[in-house]
Length: 199
Image (cartoon, rainbow, N blue to C red; front, side, top):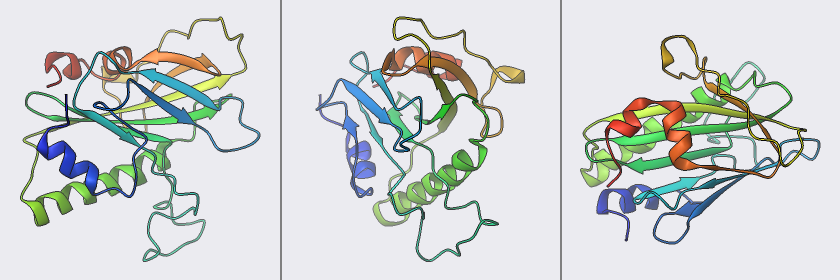
């Protein structure tokens, strides 16, 4: 099934995408750092329709050349993957970052990417008159990479209150080259994703 018109228009605002539901059944997330232990994760997304993913990292280390650079500025950070899923009454946005060893240190990546997504959604409304009725966000850190490839992922660690935020994401330790289902990820992040089926 093709992407819905709002999702197709949203996708068209990005310079590129990594996967879309009418062309792919899997989402590959890659860490580009050579010394990373967790370098590749696959999300199996064949159970869902009307979704797409993209990688915010451009390789140039900046979100926008119009913004100041420097260590004191965190607005150029970006996470490794963003997934958009269109539900019956809302847009689901999942931010994912890969970390080796420790799951800490992703807050700036999540916050900067979230602001960029907000900007894109406002562009969609301003220039195309498209606004999603509601939005649910989720934040997930996949970390580790040093386990045996046959070892199952650890039990996810939820933040207090059960709602993920940039400062308190869901964390899961997994082996490198591991596959998880998108349905499982959505269930980990927020029960709201299950309460509103994808359309």
